[in-house]
Every structure is written in C-alpha cells, then in structure tokens.
Image (cartoon, rainbow, N blue to C red; front, side, top):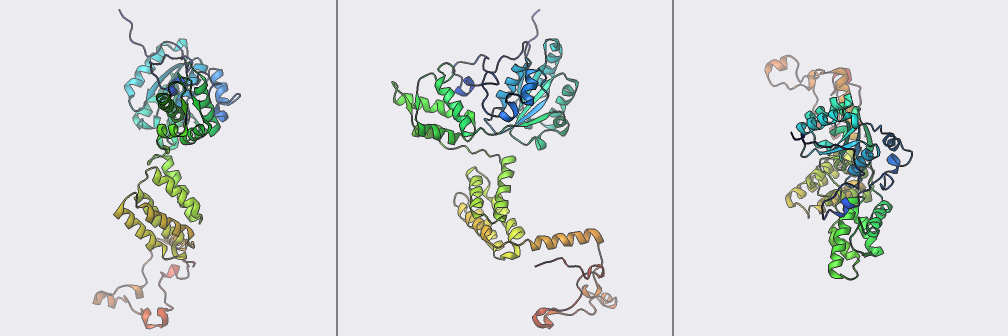
Length: 425
C-alpha cells in the first residue's frame, strides 16, 4: 500500500536552500538563507529583538507581517521557520481554500511529535471572513502557528478574533543603503547572483536604487534584465549603464492601491496640505495620486468638499472654482484633466480659510440633539389655508425687504433656542 501524499515531512530548510527550478529569477536565487543575511527590518528582527529571540528559542507566536511589496515578508516567514526548526507550509490566499487548510492541519496533528508547524498565508487580506474563521480554532488549540502576510492594514482586513491572537509586525520599505547592499551582493555572488561578471557604474546603481522605490524584488528583477541587455550588446565585457536600467525598469512603479491604505494615506496628506495652505505639498500629493492612476473624479470631488469645508466663506469663489474643476475634469478626462485639478488645488491652498460654515452646522446639530424637534414659531409658518390663518399661522410676520438692508429684529428660532448663536463670522 502506498503512503498518502504528504504536504511536508521535515522541518523547513534554510530559506535559500530549497531546490530552485532551472532559470529561477535572480530575486529567488538571492533570497537570504539565514536571519543574519536578511537585509533591513533591524527593529523587529535584529539581534536581541523579541521576534528573533522567540525564533531562536523555537517559540514563534502567531503573527501578521504587514508591509509594502518587496519588504521581505515571505522571506522573513521562511527564515523564522527554519530558525525555529519548524515545518513550513506556504499558502496563497488567492488560490487556497478551507479544504487546503484542513488537509494541512490534519497533517500537522499527525506529525506533531516531530515538531511544530508554521502555516504561512500570503495575502491574508484576500481570505474572506469564513476562511479566516476556519484558521482560528487551530491557532487557539496550538495545532499550527499562523503567519499571515499582507500589504493592507490588518485592522481592516483581518478578522478581529484572529488578529487578537496574533502579533502584528510592521515592515518598512527598504532604504537606499539596504537596496544597495542587496544589489551589490547579487553582483558579487557568481553562484547565486548574476551568472556573468558585469559592471554597474555609479550612475546606473543610483538610478536602480531610486527606481526600485524600496522594493528589493523590483531592484533584482531590473538588475537581471539590465545585465542581459548589457551582455547582448557587449558579450565580452558587459557594463550596465543608466540607460540599461531605464530600459529594464521602464518606469518607476509607484506603490498604490486604490482601495487600500496608500489610497487613504495620500488623499489624507493632500487634504491636510490644502487645509494647511501649503501649495507645494498639495501639488506634490496631487501628482503622486494622478501618476499612480487615481481616479481624477475622486480628487475632484474632494476639492469641492475642501472648498466648502475648509475655505468656505474665507473665499466664496473657491466653491465655484472647485465645481468648475470637477465639471472640466469629467468633460475632458485624463491626461488634460490635470490642468483644472492643479489650478483648483493651488487656488484652494492659497485661499483664505474659514470653517465657519462647518462650525455653524455642527452647532445646529448639537442643538437638535439636545432639544429634539421643536415646533416652528407660529409667525414663521405658512398660512396656506383659511383654517391655518384662523389658527394664527403667519400672524405678525414681518417681511424683511420692507426694512433697510432687509435687516429686521424678528425671532426666527424656536422659543427654546431664541438666544442661541450658531454662526460665528
């Protein structure tokens, strides 16, 4: 009788030691094999850190790794497993389901005597509530240790019950020096790195680091392609120049998710820059959003709101200008919609600010909350019928235009609020 197929039978091998297929990408070949080789995230995985100590003691807690693409989430999960001498099973939330999880848990229980099992779920935010709920009892019983990876805010994307049983570690984008270290390693390692000896001039190295935008995977992929371009041009002595990097990278791939944290963070920075009368910052954040592919109508709507909420009566022309920018952006579309959006952004940023309209409305809301639905004073009511007139509707009302400048001393609020002031110019 043949043995049942097993998902795993042995502790995880060091992260860089698993057999790679022929022609594996440079980023896969250069994956760190130990925590000492791991570049970046010193705050959470450096010597003496709580997470590293836990891994070295074989006591890794369930955790969520939250960070941008290329910051090392998957690699770190593998290294933690190998350091703790635990079995590592990786799942992608895009393709895996509850049935896959059940098979893994069954195998983990069967092999518990041989050591713990770490189940790594990439893109955990793509698991729905039912799928995340299916993980919870196995984490609680200690059948598995759960490690999730996400580019989205786990506060919104991971079930609160699962999140409460996991520690969240925030990974940062890699800095220029860290990306430079990774690039230099790939150039200097003829076994795992580039298979041919190439040179990378200083300008090309600087451009590669800048265009990678903190993403190690992006940097290595571009370096690999640039080396192939250089080798095709100069087989004997390939030298990578800045033009090769530009051709390999094509264009800086700006990190942006129109439904995720980056979306909300950028629009927040944009709004606060306009509100703070910082025209330079406002146009910068506007460009960041447009260049990353944000819907221009989303920005246009925010400008209309800004004109009413933050400029308001400080400059009454702000609202028609923002409204015109909204209409123009809809009418002409991108890329030309950039012009009305920039003009409205700069106008609002430079305009005098007043939130008196917002404060007045908020004060009126508070009064309604306090007093409920107070009756309209009789003299302000519409006497549409004879009966209404008999009941006193409209009696004593004074028509404002019969007085100079249409100003009149007349009670317009309910009796209970007659002395209340809502608007402060």
